Length: 421
Ligand code: ADP
Ligand code: MG
Image (cartoon, rainbow, N blue to C red; front, side, top):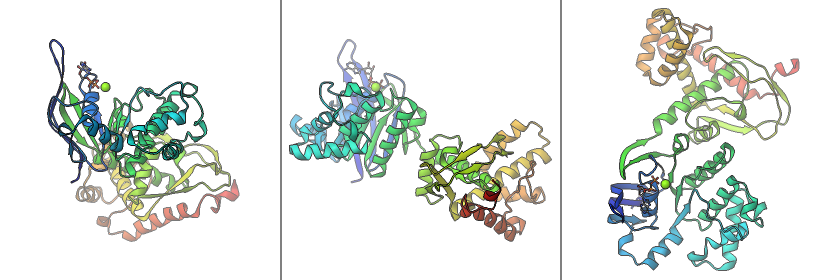
């Protein structure tokens, strides 16, 4: 049994005249460990669906199963127990008791799970530690910022270690910094194998999920699985790493400017898991970043100095480097094609199109373009095009990647240029 949450032709009517059909035949199965984002306009039934799948509310018809147990066949008491042990809720309104300490708020969330008092306190302390608020355990919720309050609400939801977490717009009221903290927490829970369903308005937040479900008028109007968009962002990150290595620059996470659906730091985490890049701490020594222009993207790389103040250095692995070479090759060949053969003269247009082509050209098409252009060595801006097998110059490719590898693994402070600085 792989499904943790199952809805079969679920409807939910709210009484009234006329009654409101908030859910209209929703069938959905969420697997163990899945992170599902639910989007849709206001009033489309998102909160209702979360309440029904979390057994906070009963369906009018259809079947709801949580970890294989059918909610309609259970007594209220059994349903309460199911909720207490298996489901953690995170709401947009934090529902914290203002007159109680942060710790008491989290501890009380465990009351219904029948956990002994001492153990409740211990679990609550662990959960507060997890959300980075151990030091505020004695504060009142009113003394905390919105982001911190949301983190307390998350601590309360996860303190009992429920396998399922349901979150209703968990970042809805937060500023960018706290939004990232909360998303990071949800992602960590996801990585630990928890099943998460998260309602959100924000397409960027939704991109964190494995799957996105869109509700309209109480029905599932669209579903999307995200692997493809992730892959494109990984290509973008690799491209940036490649260009920085070409310029002898060490890539630091904080200095990377990669556009895409996910925050760069989360994209890099996923890429680390996939073995495309490796991250390590910045060495303590101060070193200087020389400004340079990335001719293909027309942006100026950061200038300034950095020290080992907790920032991370990102390096491509062998696999990442191979994939980066392919992306760069597609991009630069496309630029050549547009400039030389198609006589396009708008830099913006060429750049825009090349950025699309770099993701979609098949290896066969890439080699054909390369052969058609006579296996060019550089892009129109003079940057080298990694040769492909079609060029019969594999040794040249090796030379190029070895050179880049040398730059990366030498580290910022053992390089010759350091002496000149
Ligand atoms: P969403 O979370 O997508 O904004 P909701 O699930 O809150 O949507 O609401 C879906 C529909 O059900 C809306 O038309 C809303 O007005 C109605 N509704 C929600 N809760 C109640 C309720 N307790 N009583 C009556 N109608 C409700
Ligand atoms: Mg809602």
